[in-house]
Length: 437
Image 1: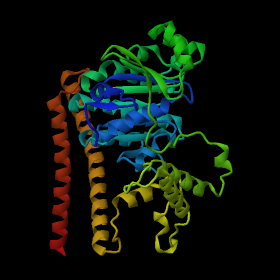
Image 2: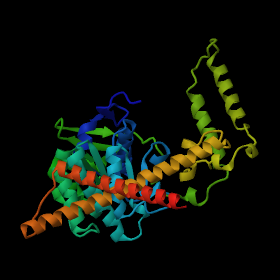
Image 3: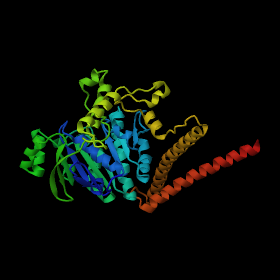
Image 4: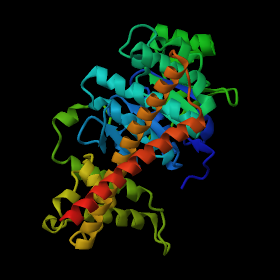
């Protein structure tokens, strides 16, 4: 359990960020490839999740899927390995679920093949969040990877509507409790309208002249030179809330590194790798043993004992036939979605019929809730469109209008009544059929 919900540490030296300012602010994290940019973002995400704070992670390369091993995120995308497969039509009820139940969402854009569908899903997600936050008004962060693709200074694959919406969130989101943090390895390629709105920056190592020029304009020429020699994981942190500029060495993230660059070891893994890693971890553990034992034994005796423990550890074995294969993951491999769900949700006595019945009931309940939310959102939209048409006919022309809070509540109430009437007619029809039979 974290020591404080108001501040969270990001370095071993104790440097902290205020949670509320990060959730509702406008941030920018940048650095060349390999400088620690994505690790820093993961550290911030881990600390927010440790405090049960809500956010939407827009993951373009599947780098954040390792978080699902540790945290209860809703992993959505266009792949069967996701918790929920979604299209742009499913986004609104999904966002409502995330805001109302404070559920963090991982939007995995790497699972989308069609670029138009990807942009449509992202646009609808950001728009739904921006619109819903006018009603909910709770601190909520959007973490956007590869910002130069969606907020390009020139060109880019993000459509003009998406770019305009993201800049609108940066300019007006804070009043609604909606914050945004964008990441890019090329600050010179990110739209300046976004960068000028930011109130906190994390500058990792940059070497290209165009990128260091951006640093020079914001921090000064001295910082532009310093930024080129920063070590991996080291950054210059600039924040408006305390008007400070600090040089910080960020800690390593705790969760699995799903976005690590493949190496030759991945191409030709050694059959001894698993044993070597086990021995190394055991050796590391025995190094923490005090030099004297509880009975005052000498350091040489303690070292002898630790060596014997290390030697014995390599001989430990078990009968794999007694353990289901699905519960014995390959060393270093990411568990599948089924393994994660089984490990987290399945009781030990799975053969008990009561647990099977309970699992079926929970599945049916979750499915009903999800479909009802989707239907409710669709009907609510149709009710609003009908009211707008009637209003336009009444005044004899189309006019721009924005529904108020109570009007939106009325739309939702109307949608609930429609669903209730549908169930009532269905029940009445069932009773008539039974009586006729």
